[in-house]
Image (cartoon, rainbow, N blue to C red; front, side):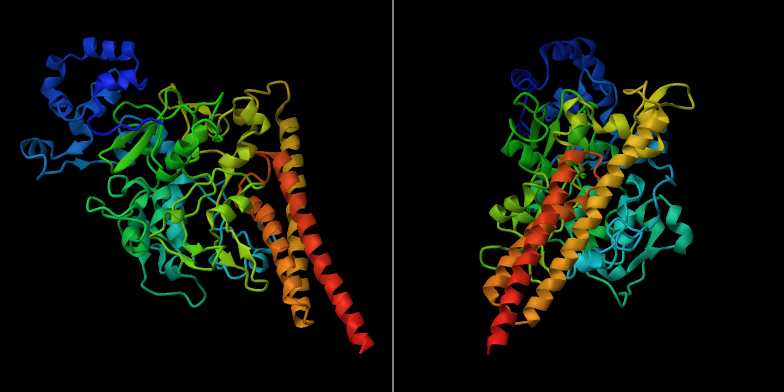
Length: 538
């Protein structure tokens, strides 16, 4: 991948293939210095060639820099002393892109409000038993929508003792304003809670800290926050959910990604990562003053844009497999994207020498997975057909002005078969497609329940074997089976499509989990049977 620093020139951008010569020529002709001087752009371009390469010739070419940057006059008089203020709030974009902005903040009543996964009717009925020892057992809810992503994270019972609550009580559950207009800090710790949360996780759910956070969250005098920052302090400085600038470059409107660990993962394997097509990834990486990076695309690829959040990633402290030493937030492994699927992740984390927590009963070294939609989708039937996330989740609709736009509310296709499915499958019909979708999800949920049952049997049998005095060697062997079975199962409680994104992968993974749990149960039962016979002979 290409690195570019702040001294990047427009000519270098052309040479690197980042900006085409025709585009640059067009920009030069249509926007000569005489035309841009009046609004200050030319002055800015004297130092910011990389911005000029992005901006000129784009849909935002004629926008003055002052639209998004305040205190520019003072900055130009003394650049080192006076830093400009960059406006990142979605409301600024919403002044021109009203339909997209309004759809983003529209309440989606199809999403279950505060629905706990670990209940008999939830996504993972045995969650508390299978994740015993992890903070997610205190509260782990179904996702609602992008407008709620910061509010819901801060209000969950496991986040910092549950001290942040809805300001208006339960009536405030539909409020989608700024974080601290909706929430209040009670300062009180709940009696049954966890002290979870970290600065890296917050970076995924907001754009507020893009200019306050160095690449990968490393410490830097120029950065207000880093991976080791106090989570409450970072939370108090977080006012908006993920914004437009996460996916759209504000200078030139190009599709882009800003999530640091995603950029790092793609740069490590530009030809073979899950987004690569024909041995290449459409992502050009720009390095700003060795402080932060963005990745810009020639064409929209929402698989990458959505993968800024909808992936398995590690943002937590943990432990090393090799020696049991703690891994703290000063370690880069606490901001890491594997970009691997359920069949590959256990081995990946073993090689990374990292696991999240030990099970409270078996002591198995377990991984707590996050929402791995991107890796699940990679290689699926729809992915091979060239379908991208936005085609199913952000379909076009007609706005009040009669013009078509992509809805940014992010729909659930199951509730919108016509918009999400029939564009590609017009002859199938709504009822038929819904029936097919239900068949996939019902089958996968069935395998999830069976996986959970056998994991529960393995945990119970382990406890019984331990009480029976089975040798540590046998317990170690069974514990390895627990680690394998858990990884192949828990991935699917974190992934939010109930298998629809990749039914074949779900079936292989979940049946593998069942087989591993059964093997572990057999190891323990056989050992207890031998122990009983030996005891009878005495």
